[in-house]
Structures are given as C-alpha cells and as structure tokens.
Image 1 (cartoon, rainbow over the protein chains, first blue to last red):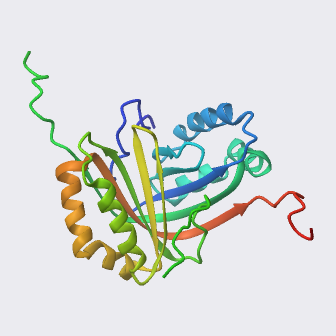
Image 2 (cartoon, each protein chain N blue to C red):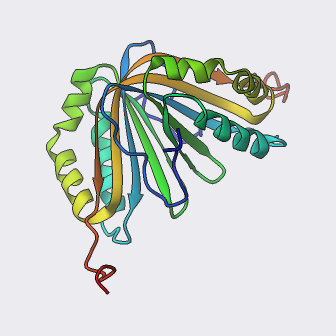
Image 3 (cartoon, chains in turn brown, cyan):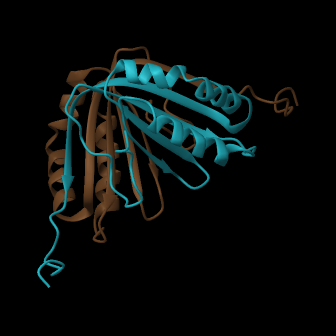
Length: 126
Length: 126
C-alpha cells in the first residue's frame, strides 16, 4: 500500500504478470484552477486502494501528459475507477482541465526492467 | 500504416478492443550521443510495421520519460519487438542511453476518449 513511487526518479518496476495498467494520456486546457490540489488528493487516495502497485507520470511542457497506474488485478482497478472522489474529479476534468484525453486499460501479459549496474563510485566502504 | 501521430498535440485515439500496448518508461543516462538519430529512425521504422496503430511520448525535463506504442494485435507487436534495427537500438540503449527502464506489454480490454467540443469560435461559415 506504500510502494507508490518516491522522490528518486526511477520507473515503476516490472511486476509478475498478469496485472493491470491504465494509460491516461491528456492534453490540458488553459483552465487549470484547482488541478494541482485535486491531483495531489487523488494521488493520496489511489495509494489507499488495495492492489494499487504504483503510478508514474511524464509531462511535455505545454503539451502531452501521460500517466500510467498499475494494479494487481481488475478488481483493484475497478475500485479505483468507481471511487466517488475520483469520479467527481473525472467529471471536473472534462468540464474544465482537459482539451482531450484517452484512457486505455490493459492486462499486462509481459514485462521486464533494466537498471544500470552502479559504477565504482566508491560509495560503499568509506 | 500512416495513422501515426502528427504534429498537432492530441492523444492517440481509443481503438476498438482488443489491441495491444507497450509502455516503455525510462530514465536516461548522461550519455546521449546518437540517441536523437536512432529515435527518429525507429519512429520511421515502426510506422512501417503492419498493425502499428500509433505512439505517443511524454518527457519530464531531466527526468522520467514514458513512450506508449499501440498495435492491432500481438503479432504486430512481436514483429516490432523482433525487428533487427530495433533490437540493435535496445542493446545500445542498455549500454549507453538509459539509467533504467521498464517495459510493460498489455492487451487492451477497454478504452475511451474525450475531446472537448469546439467553442463557438466562428471558424465555420465565415
């Protein structure tokens, strides 16, 4: 429940398939009042959803943004999709914050990850 | 084959499920020589893959990047995964361009999209 991404920049890891992912791609409107607060609140809420595995976000300055959220199973994802505050935020998003968005929900069948081996920076044994 | 994303900023649309998506999340290293050329070449190549539906990318300046590519079916995605130049680029990415990455491949079961209705800007009938 607390393996949500932390401050150090690192992709969400690969989990054991199957799991679920929701890809939410957006272009924002010019009317962003209240967005930051709601976004922070949703991030807090999703971490409380049993089966939430993690999420990550990238944003082209002034352009496209992509958020991907990972869930252990379809039930976990459904719990998030049906959460009352989340639904209210979706509605407000359509009315105010987004020019356009697409949501793709998929069952992950395969995943892998790569992390560069640490160079000999001498950070140990000093 | 040419419905890849164009210049105007717009999310890749929702397609009729099922289809496939590959989410590739990266943190780049400091060694980026040759990346731009290879990236442009791969973008050209993937558009030639039968069953490629589109791709989109967002990049936090100096941080996480997310690329999502959409394919009609698992075969189309496999063709891309096995493409010789793509495989060579993956190898070079691990050696040079990436600090870390994760790839999640999933079968899209559900999707939807939203596009804000155009306001009355009077762009028609003038």
